[in-house]
Amino acid sequence: MSDLRELYQEIILDHNRSPRNFGVPEQSNRTAKGYNPLCGDIVTVYLLLKGNVVRDIRFEGRGCAISIASASIMTELIVGKTEIEARRLFQFFHDFVTGEETVEFSEELEELTALSGVRDFPMRVKCATLAWHSMAAALDGDGATVATE
Image 1 (cartoon, helix red, strand yellow):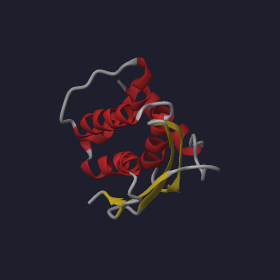
Image 2 (tube, one colour; image 1 turned 90 degrees about the horizontal axis):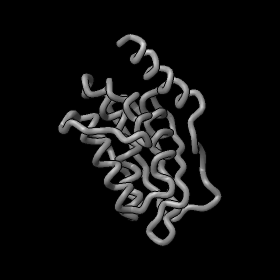
Image 3 (cartoon, helix red, strand yellow; image 1 turned 135 degrees about the vertical axis):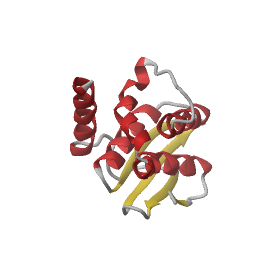
């Protein structure tokens, strides 16, 4: 079990040190901001949605390692997905970290298991889901700011 915990920690640290898809894109048509008032994490998610498919997704902001790692992993999973698939991934991830359902991971989603430890810490669930809530708000297209209160 400690080997698995170490692997999960390394995945989180890697995504925190070198977040994928970090920064403002050259082009986007959907944006949403997220704020976690409990710890101060802030994220902005930028989407380029074309023909109902997420062609590009980027994020910027600052926060704890879990917040940044979750956002980084999310961007890798969402790009190329349809809006419906992206919303399903959001619900899947939310159910997983809140422990509301037992979920089975496909190989594609395996990296998300690194965030499994947040289930035991409700305050950390908010860190892990901040970018995901922001991505869902960006899909809604109203430029909303979401908060994890």
